[in-house]
Length: 128
Image 1 (cartoon, rainbow, N blue to C red):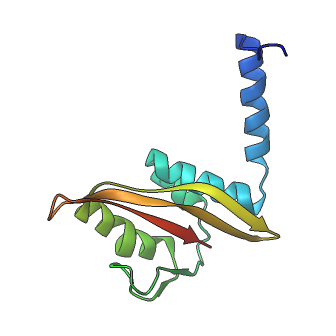
Image 2: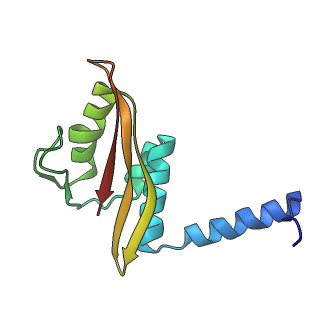
């Protein structure tokens, strides 16, 4: 068995191939780009992927639950701003994606340190 090609040219080809696959506008790739933008803290990338007429509902037991939000501005006001206010290093990192047609489920974990108590938490999630 031969060793993998680690030349700069091979690395460039691999990056280009990955880029072309993720640039396809499939529902799963749109969701992947959303979580990648979240991870980088790239707010314009996050909001650029959200429909201006969305339906975003947090789980009923989630501390920031307040019904269904219908615009990116509501998501910012009622979720992202409170998370930034209340948590240090809060993240929602997806590690697996399951898709069927236009439906995509992201599996991952929340993590962060609650500012009031200084306690760190990690909790799994499944987002549709």
